[in-house]
Image (cartoon, rainbow, N blue to C red; front, top):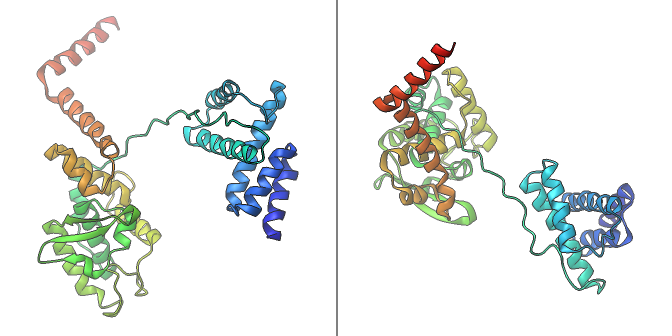
Length: 322
């Protein structure tokens, strides 16, 4: 208890916060026992709000919803991301919830204010031919046999890095050519495994005995015989790409994105891709339709005769003007 109190006091003294905000931080640290990092973020965010209130001649304990909207708009104009603004609003909501609990105010002006949504960047994907080139390379030692099996499984099944690392031997069903994957929130799904991935897995399972015993459940282990760490997978894939002269840095999520994009490009079945990826909301999967459209647009521009003529006319007009 003493350490949490001291932590709250450090935040208070650093920011010279108004007394109600200091009491709120003590409450979060001592009674709610919030994480130190959470209290630090709340302290900094409330300090920014307090400074803004001073510049506006406003009382931070008696803000209206319109004043808070003005404050949020200022954060957005200053280039703060939607995620950062959402954290600011979370701190303010919690602060006003505390004030209501204490009987100081009766309304929470931040309840109906939503942060601006960040535009999600499109994930990068690897070209099909480049992916095939990387996966058709011959491993040079047992650890590279493992690395190739991991890459084949990620690309064949669209696995997340955490899902790959968590795989146990009973999750593999060789007879059914499938793997049982435990995704986010402990949600399990069955995913088919392609022929190339099955071959690579068989080769690794033959080499696996060099590193560990039969009592180890993990499918993929390190050179020390224990379940492989996420960072090791990332480092090994990056190394594989560098040695094989990949056009872009090779990492697990790039392979998962490539799996989704290539499958959607070939099948057009968004629901199936959603199931295979383990997305609970199809809106998450729809980002790959944008990637697919970009690819189709590139094909159109390079192959359609009318598109070529349009580009040629632009070129010619530019030449004439020059």
